[in-house]
Image (cartoon, rainbow, N blue to C red; front, side, top):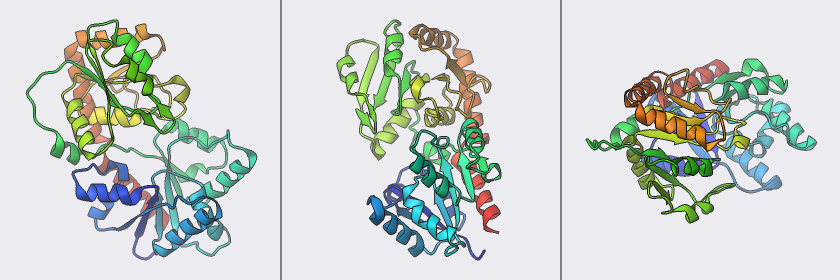
Length: 356
């Protein structure tokens, strides 16, 4: 293949890129594309058309073809925007483009028969599919739809340079636990546990986040003296504020809804905590690529009983030296394995493998 030209193609990509360029903003939401730009590769950041039906398929196919790129990268795999280019590749009209994507779940076996056929058709045009979770990857391979030699694990992580630039140095020692997640969080069990202790908890989330609705938290604000609940709007200023609050915290807590643990939900909060050197308490999820107990960076809560959360938070609070060691282990793991530079290099290796 001639000179590599990459199309970073997904919903809202142009906005994400503009946010990064206007700074300060972390690069990890762009999945290594900023780092490849810095290495000298040509990358075009193009937002997927939001039109539906045939018009959407035509628009998205035109966007891909007009980019004149030979690598199509999708940090999230959405099927319908890729249906047109899949048809062209299948009939041999546009074979030169190589397609790489990141799958955040397993193959959708709960879809209708027609939808499964469309998914299978589109998935088969990919030259490489990355997964965050080994379990999701194994499930994808087991379907027979995804060829195992096209699948790889991705060690995605935080933009460490952004953290270095945005964290305000503070000598204040704080003992609060913090939750900043917004996806399928089990806030009731967390609040129930902390309400039975005198330990401080800070919760920051959106009122609504796609199908997640946390408006019920409004009724719990100011109910407990040790629990602070704040709704936030996601923007650059908020992101910087939350990073600093997490950096000053004692521990990151990640309560997850059991019924949503069919993919690595909570993974972003885990890698953020690692990078900030914070011990972690997280609901057990077999899809997590990082076992916080095996890595000695935190504690897994394996029960939906609040008493198990109470045990975990009180144990960590009473064993501060152990908590400190967990944080140090996490920071080392982030620097050695889970950061955006490593993620970018893994994607680049795959680009070179499929391109030549």
